[in-house]
Image 1 (tube, rainbow, N blue to C red):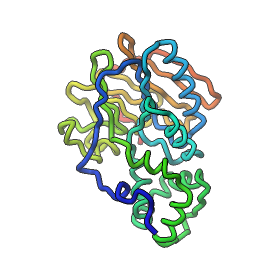
Image 2 (image 1 turned 90 degrees about the vertical axis):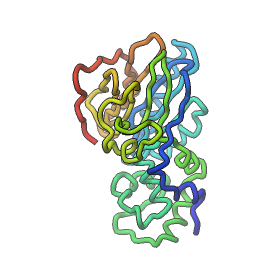
Image 3 (image 1 turned 60 degrees about the vertical axis):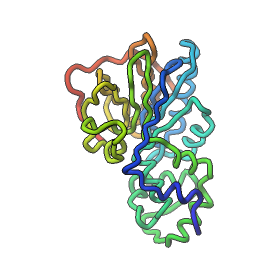
Length: 276
């Protein structure tokens, strides 16, 4: 049985990294750290963003920095929220989305994904597997096709690797795991933007905003901003706010539903490596 949108899922995009240029922001910009299946935290974050954006005015742009799925309890619910969010809610491809797409295209060849959060994602769709299951490719394809909505497949398959956006005269690039500063923006590799390989450090003329690297608190410097605070394990989802005439600020969402926004302190010297 052929999976839905098979051509899209089969594509190998290591040589086709796509960073979409959004031009100049018309209002505040919010970048959301790795959600990892925590739909309740994302729902609370979107409420906080709407409240904050209403006070500032202008057209808000919200960018999820990849790894929306896996590990947490409700990846399906997270993708429902993104699908329903409209044009102002955008996502970038993370390494976990790439692993899920690879698994759906060829389950036997990409089975490692199951142990990296895939079991939890499939369970959120009502599909329970165990490490001992050994379904053939045809049977696995039938199971996936019966459980995962077309809208979710289309969303995942259409995610760009990043966005470029000018905010108040400053150029930012939003990717999951950074950029390789030794390569032109038009010639990035998936290994850099999805996994951070050869992607550390500053990129000339840009400020890179990324998730992927788990940090205890958001790290902000002139050239690099990291905002993945490990929502799935810490219970804290961090959202970066940027705006013309405004310094970077961080909206912190907790498992209790609290939302607090505070100016982000600027790091001095090098940003530490964090953990993946």
